[in-house]
Image 1: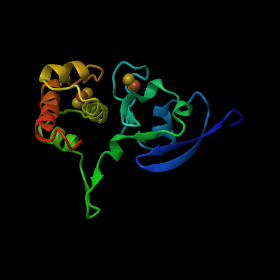
Image 2: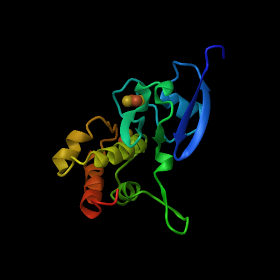
Image 3: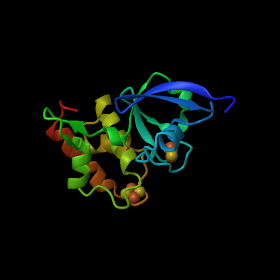
Length: 165
Ligand code: FES
Ligand code: FES
């Protein structure tokens, strides 16, 4: 590719080098080049939140940023949220568990974005009430209308483990 740029991203803890056309979105870099298809493409123009990932711990719509703009950054996708315990066993992130326990999805298409966005929101530290959650998660659309259970799932994590996320 004559106009390809070489960039390095740390994706879910692993440094990867990619050669990409400069117009490649971060979303396409993740899905098409790294085959991390947990991150979903809904609208591809910043309106649905299905493509939400974390960049250096902050949530971002990956369809709205070019991969080359993230050169050198740490990217976390839904595949990277599970955590290893002291024995090296992988366990789901508390928000992933809570979404299952509260039945917070139907088709599941919005779910990776909902969960990554919720992790970012909890990192921001402003969500205290159900109303806060509804407001601060309003960029993540659920076509199935699972909002009540999504809010319940997030609220359960806020009230059970406020210091461990
Ligand atoms: Fe990025 Fe819809 S696919 S916001
Ligand atoms: Fe289907 Fe949210 S669970 S779009």
